[in-house]
Image (cartoon, rainbow, N blue to C red; front, side, top):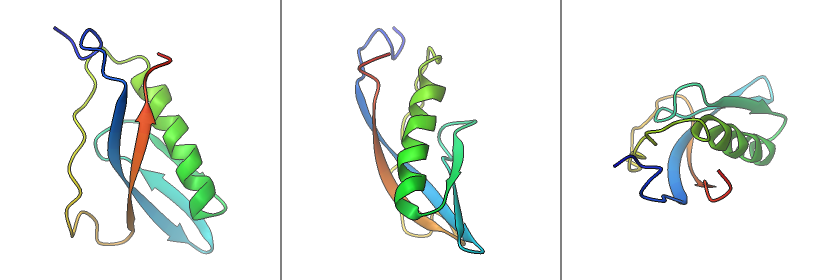
Length: 88
């Protein structure tokens, strides 16, 4: 049974947000291809949520989110981001 067949609708992934010269970019270690940028942390979080949802919309197997752990990254802020797959 795939994750899609199990009707997973909400997941929370750790997102790593980096700052460079007043601009922000984010990556999601658990979701290959999910990345984005923004002019603020808030904008970057909104953008990465959409990026995660779009990447997962076409996956048969949804990757299991990692748990937050201290030291997940050395050069960024870790933010847990909840995404909904209910529409996919």
